Amino acid sequence: MPIDVSAALAAEPRRAEIGWHHKDVQLYHLGLGAGTPATGPDELRYTLESRLQVLPSFATVAGAGTAAFGGMGAPGIDVDLAAVLHGGQTVRVHRPIPVTGRAVQTSKVAAVYDKGKAAVIVLRTEASDDDGPLWTNDAQIFVRGEGGFGGERGPSDRLTVPERAPDRTVERPIREDQALLYRLSGDWNPLHADPAFAKLAGFDRPILHGLCTYGMTLKAVTDTLLDGDVSRITAYRTRFAGVVFPGETLRVRMWAEEGRVQVTVTAAERDDAPVLADTLVEHS
Picture (spheres, one colour):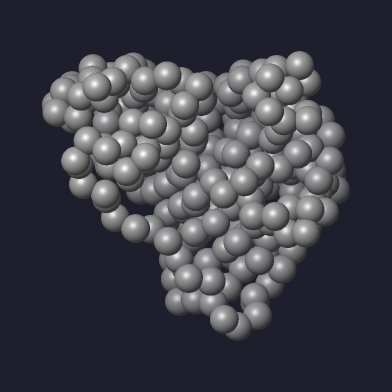
């Protein structure tokens, strides 16, 4: 069997030293669509180094984007990458991410779940600097055809959409060049840039990175319901429910509760086709 669960869970974490500068943060924010309008004071906190703050979702690209799949080469993991999908992502920040920093990041397989026709591998990356823990990333990797080995099904993270109307609904346009800019933060998959490769993968044209949509959504929630203050965010999770294309518009619906915001994200031009589901922002 390609996945040896015992070996994967017992493997020593992989360790890497990573670093980032304000330019990396600014590039990441620009890749999420920040800077419109270019001189807007609410946007300058994402683009101008003298006012810069860091969205917690930056943790998914710090160190050139190793957070999502950094553990796929672990002992016990030998799967066909063509059968691999990024099913979900969780980021928990232990304190605000500094604008410039260095950290030690460790990656390991935290869990392997048996979903019947598929396996779900939870890849965990944790980063710490001289002042202590910074963030914990969990990437849920869905591997088709690798279930049925008798393992635990794992927890259900599904959220029931509230029956009441959203407290806020905002729309965020995706620029035609947004995937080209976002990929400069470390995800060089040609699926997001090369039309010929996208057709081979079954798409009419290149699709936007799921983690770009993830970051755009967090920025929308922060700016709409958290007064633009990224330091209030403690955790953020989502399930990738569908694709979105550059040039389309994200429709972000938000339900505010005590200490959390539940979110759904759809493609406005395609009859609200699901893009992100089971999405939750936890905050102080």
